[in-house]
Image (cartoon, rainbow, N blue to C red; front, top):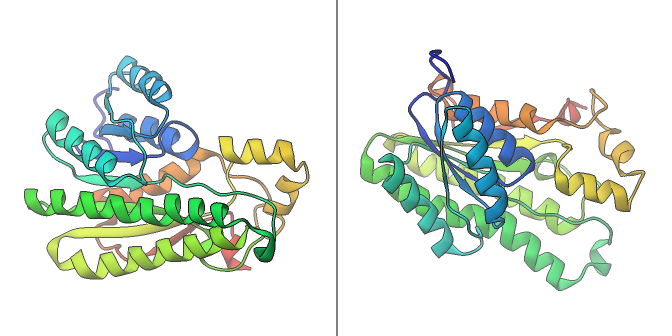
Length: 257
């Protein structure tokens, strides 16, 4: 990947939800910026293909397939980072899940449980496993959690998703306050509607969804996954050394109006 000193040069970064969409774009970008990336998601075959692609480009990647809702899986991914690359410098806790459709009183309890489990417990599990490893190595670290514009105001998303993404911002701010003086920076991205696999599938089910998703934004289009990944890369880099506890909008101006 050339001789240029990258934004994340020589850092080891764990990326969850990295089998597609924003997570896969982040893996490619972070590797191109000099990071060794640890790929975590449930679809191991997709992770292996992505790792092979990164290796072919001269980068460094390891696969740690697993589910963020299982603490043991997250612990295994953190251990993989240390065993393969010597340490864990940063993490992009990007795995998430949502649904479309029902009003609150029509939403099944199982949908509520899954949304909260993936989006909130998943971030909780990641923070609980990542922070001790960063503290153990004594060099600080940086973490970015993926929230959403739904974490800032009520959107067209189903109510459990809005609640979950608000909770991600709360966890981010609380953790940033607890560990800031120990050298760990923790921020969240407030992501606008993005052209991911999940969004593409939803738009097939509801053709008018794209128009509704971008109606509020100043830039009325879906983001490309790499546009979100670029913001995460900056927050994880040393260039963002005085940024912590933030909820950074990457939403085409949706939160500005």
